[in-house]
Amino acid sequence: MAIDYINALGAGASFDTKKIVEALVEAERAPAMAMIERKMASADAEISGIGSAVSILNKLKLSAQNLSDAKDFNTFSVSNSQTSAFTAVSNSNARAGTNSITVSQIAKEQRSISGGFNNASDNVNDGSQFTLSLAIGASNPATHTIEITDTSVEGTAAAINAANLGIRAEVINTGAASGNYQIQLIGETGAEEAFTATASDGSLTFSNLQTATDANLNVNGVDFTRGSNAIDDIVTGVTLNLLNTTTGSATLGINQNNQFAKANIVDFVTSYNEAKTEMSALTSSEVDGPLAGDSIFRSLERNLRSAMVDTSSTPGTNIRTLSDMGISINRYGVLELDEQKLDQALTNNYSEIVKVFSADTDDQSTTSTNPAGIAGDIEKLITEVTGSQGYLTTQKTSLEENNTKYDEELSELEERMAKVEERYNKQFLAMQKVIDEMNNTRESLISSLEYLPFTNKD
Image (cartoon, rainbow, N blue to C red; front, side, top):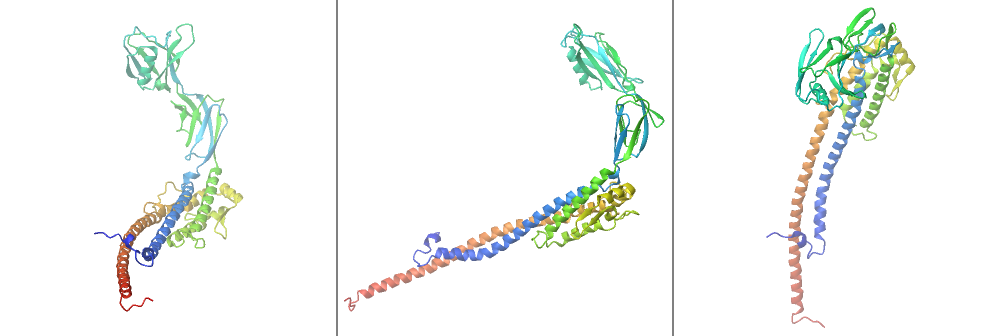
């Protein structure tokens, strides 16, 4: 039969045996639990510290990526003497220089219009189904047949659009007293996109409003013809969008713009200083930084600093370090920027700055052992520790696994303490029985002695 230890304890003793059991169990539980909880707290703090480190390092990595390719420095501004005739947008493949552009004709699309109808719901013919043939192409036309089942004006236009042939049909209302609803067909730009439309029963005819033409332009003395007004294959790295003909020749200037590179360099310096401040706090023993005892993370901190202040792995002749372009490090390890000196370096030694940061290469692999320049080397260092197999990633995983084990240890401790409590309860209950028996014996002896014949009660 099960024994109710809790209610049985303390029943006949002069002291609270239940509290004594609780105190004894807690005395065994407390140090073991405190040790496990300290380990868990330490692991949680380190996991949080790693999360903060990865976040700030990734921010620095993004800033480095804006400088790690030579093409990141190919930033240009565009000047255009006739913006009403065309617009121009440059990309990183552009080359600095001046271009003379004359636009004699822009590309146009063919526009054709049908005869008039009184209502958009009117039937194109007598209501019978018909076919519409569209022959598209000037030199070698391809014919497409569209079945018109809804023969209303709106239904005919919808069928043309549903065919997706590059010809758009619109129902327009001219506002005339009669025959004001017409179908307008609009093709694509370029002479080769000309088309003809023929109805099978002759009930629908079209006349041309505008002829499809190519764009004709002269760039730097060379004549070009294009079927579109968006042209990206004449001036290297520049997309022209033709709007109108020019008045004489227009001048398009492509100029190196150092301000984009300067902004990226300033952002890189700022990101490093933020990362340095955060990492110092994480490894500081004075403020109990969660990564204070992590020698590998401290090594990363030193390597990042060296990459920033030492000679670039791909130095130039006049620009070899960040300090050569006005970026120095103070006694607190913080980078300071001399903006005037940076401007001078960008003006006088732009190509060397490109080399110092990016090794004058594009799309460098973070697994390559080749020198990658300051930005490229920083990107590699951060990728090595934050990647899927990097130290910070594997260390975080290991700590999380340890915390799972600590949870299991806490559960095991509670199970063990339950057994200890049960053992103490049994021992105190046995002791209590002995005390009860002794009390009963005492009471019996007292009672017997009181009734002896020679007992004098007077």
